[in-house]
Length: 188
Image 1 (cartoon, rainbow, N blue to C red):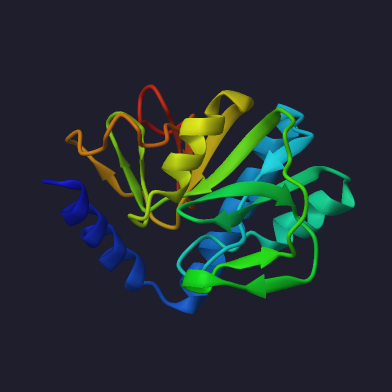
Image 2 (cartoon, rainbow, N blue to C red):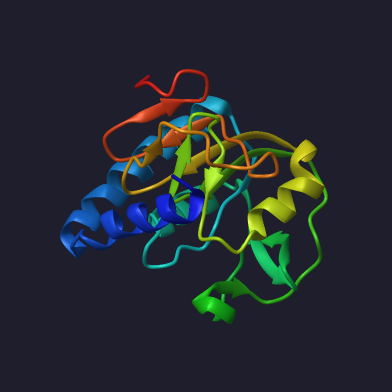
């Protein structure tokens, strides 16, 4: 199997969910994420502004903002992105991605990055939407990020190695039913 075929199979699984199933899945993942963020004592968190197919983390964002945790989100620039502080209002941009208004880049160390994925393989590298935005960002800034948590509505894991060396590597893969460990790909 190749990455393109695997991505297609995982996307089909995601499309079979209905809005009630997605709502429940999102709430379960949000609760797990919040607990893990608190356990990690993270003060600077990179996250994403969700698309419909991704885990909706807006309630998590609201909670973390109340707790004065610095939240960073992607701001699209060419074929990659830079990080800016999360702030309102959000604008809809290319590919339906929502972003805050442009602001200064953020250059400090990041305690934790929350990254949406379609699936992964035995190397625990990300299979995303196929545009490479995260891969290009992590290639340049990966050393500034302490931990990477993948999130997805379904656990989609390929038993073959289908990712490339440049694909983003995670520490945990959080789904509604399980939290997978990087080394074992088993429930922790």
